[in-house]
Image (tube, rainbow, N blue to C red; front, top):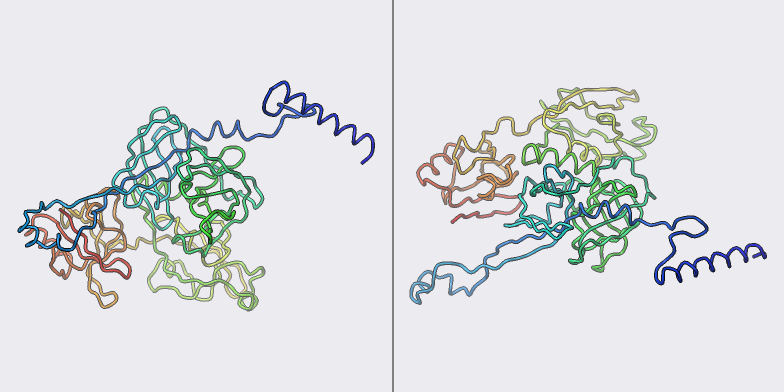
Length: 453
């Protein structure tokens, strides 16, 4: 270090000490005429749009087995009412539309909640209404009274680059309005098994329990993602967190607001990733794309002219990196939406057009069968896993069918304790019973009994 450099550093130190003395505490506003870097002005704009979400789930308390015996209860004159206890959970949310009072959060934050409460930055606590949620992407949309709200502007998450600075905001462990910073550590993270559709932003900004549903913003204060999960082998934060890109949450939110559910279509094509050998054999220059392994007869893909062995390179102008990427892109498309495909067939570039088909086109609205099934669409009896049942299509949130416990993908086996052989049987049973009080359904690999009082 030469004399002039040492003198310059000494001057900086003296200037810094002078600033501290003048302020009596804290740092000076500037050093050598340059303002100190701070995120405070941006955060002052952003933080009011971040909310705390608490939920109440009423759970029937376990009691002694003898108390469940009707004779025992009658003999000792024990009331029929079951004890209940409340389970609470905490998370975060993002106000994205101040005029309509729309709040984004994670599905897992509000799942199974009987009550949802939103606490604003100014201390107000409001009852929220669930507009809809999508477990496949872990996105939920709530509505609160639109009075005196501030909202976050939405960025284009496709423009994010690894190394961009980001800030995570939320309520970890109940500590309100906590801010952490970091960078974008990775993009397009998949295969984590957290959600059905995965395309995560990875960040080293600290994300902890309670941060779920909170915003990940850029240095302009624009929303780039919604914090969702962490990789924590030891149970604590190790600097690997994941956020759902805002472009994905925006597409899901629009459908939830319009329909109350996500209306995913069916294209009818199966794909796999390209290996180096396959890319070379199929004359794919850079190895990017999704290889078509099968096309369902009569499907939208079949009508569009796609064939086994094609390599899909782009969907609606967006490059396809692999099979998971293509599935994610299709998962955001609506029923009936146009599809422009760019693919390689026998070494030549081709372009094809098609439309996303409705997988429930032949299903009937539940209200045509019974008022208690309004909000769901139901198909004709089919056989799956050797179990005959009526398949359930989309179910609108907060509808009678939703409150009965039905969800998309369920299969109805019994109604009010009676095995059914089709939609007519359901209508007949409910007409005779005059109300719906139980459903036995298949949900995935589980058989579940749904009861109503």
